[in-house]
Length: 342
Image 1 (cartoon, rainbow, N blue to C red):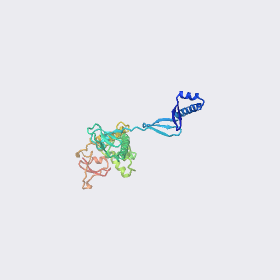
Image 2: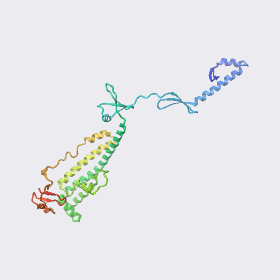
Image 3: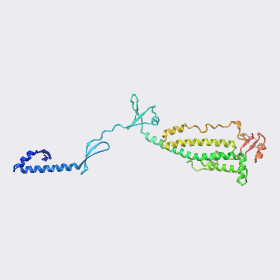
Image 4: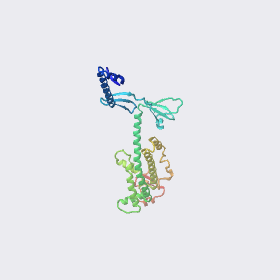
């Protein structure tokens, strides 16, 4: 039997000794006090067993907590964590100017090659790198977002351009088209007026799309400039054809850019691969060749040097123009410029 005495240090009394003490009348009180002390010690032990709980932290440390006072006593410290590494992506390695190969970066920002024979560590000064790349990432996000918006607009423009091409194929253009359009403004019906009016409506729908997003309000000068970049009823058929071809090529290029931005947004490819594919897109105007100088401009050839304005004809109707001999100079009533008839 273990009991506490003196300074609380336990000592043991066996059953035989306890029986001897109980047998003698003079030692019986001592035996009874020993039995009582043993009972109290057992009660304290049972109480302490529910008072203290052992707990373990996520880091592997172990401690004992006193449920009554809240005090904690460390039993085992947290084990030392192994150094953490992560793989560098090929894009990160390239941006850091590292030679081709596989690399890993530790918690101390030390870059080390993987599978290298010399085991040399490469230390990269990354003091401002996180902020630098964060800014780049934000700009890239804005770029891809703007490409998505431009692609949505290009899809709508493509529908209008295709319909405009159909209308212009049947509409009178050049001087005749201008006269038909003018007659339509006064309610005079003429052949081809339906196509002219439909084409002009589509052209008007395309004008706002020529303004760069975020460039502010559109002035009258801006409006006139944007209209000149689009097909026009006053243009010759050949000129409108080349303008439409150029616009549809650029439109297709914009939709290709939007498709790449969409793949980035949907996590199909990463931003680095997206930028690579954008750079690989072909020039949309590479297949469009300028007409030879001898081809003229439809049925008229610009004459940039006209010394005598008095000898220049000024036709008003189509009949006036057709009555001019080949090589005659005339002023277009629409743009006021001087041309030479082929």
